[in-house]
Image (cartoon, rainbow, N blue to C red; front, side, top):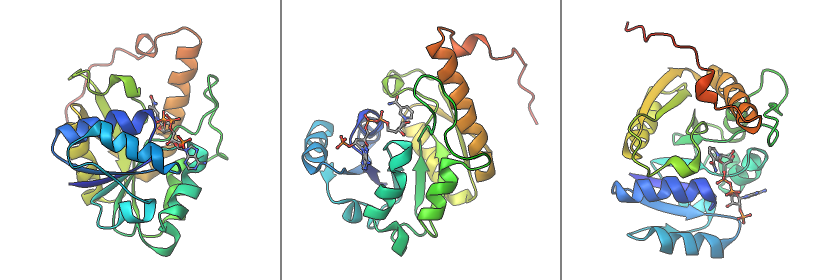
Length: 211
Ligand SMILES: NC(=O)c1ccc[n+]([C@@H]2O[C@H](COP(=O)([O-])OP(=O)(O)OC[C@H]3O[C@@H](n4cnc5c(N)ncnc54)[C@H](OP(=O)(O)O)[C@@H]3O)[C@@H](O)[C@H]2O)c1
C-alpha cells in the first residue's frame, strides 16, 4: 500500500516504522521538510519525503499525525479543499483534548474527524489509532485493540489492514458519528492517567458477548 503520513513526530515515526516493516511504501510530509527527510532516512527502505500535496497523490491511505488543531492547515497544505483527498481513506488519530485534563476542546457534538471530513471533500475519514500511546507500537503486544469508526466500508477495510500490519487487532465500532465518543473516551483515559489511575483498572469486567 502507498501510505502518506502527514506529520513527522512521535506517532508518525512509530506507525511509519511498523508499516515499513510490513512492506508498505511510506511517504512523509511535514511543515519542516528537513524533519521529514531525516525521518524518511531513519525509517529506511523505500521511504521518501515529499510536500504534503505530492505525498497524498496516488496514496491508498493518509495518516494525519499532527496536533488536533493543525488538521485544517495540514489538509489545506495537501490540497484537500480542492479535492486532492477525495476517495482516499484519511486516518484521524488526533486527540482534541486539553493536555493532562482530558476535556474535549471541540464544541459539543463535533468531533475532530468531522472537522477533517468538512475540510477534505470526498475524503473517507476513519477515526482510529488515537487510544494507543506511540511507545506501544512495535512492542509486539498482540492484545492491543484499536477502535475504529467510519462511514465507508472500503476505507474501514484499509484501516483494519493497517492496524493488523502494525501488530494489533482492529475493532470497528460504527460510523463516523461515533468519533466524538471515541475522542471523549481518550479524554477520560488521559485524565485518569494524569490522576495516577491506570485506565485499565476502571474498565468494567463485562464478558464479551458474541453475536
Ligand atoms: N504520541 C502519542 O502517543 C499519540 C498517541 C495517539 C494519538 N496521538 C495523536 O497523534 C497526533 C500527533 O502526535 P505526536 O505525538 O506525533 O505529536 P508530535 O511528536 O508533537 O508531532 C507533531 C507533528 O505535527 C507537526 N505540527 C505541529 N503543529 C503543526 C501545524 N500547526 N501545522 C502543521 N504541522 C504541525 C509537527 O511539526 P514540527 O516538528 O515541524 O513542529 C510534527 O511533525 C496528535 O494529534 C496526537 O493527539 C499521539
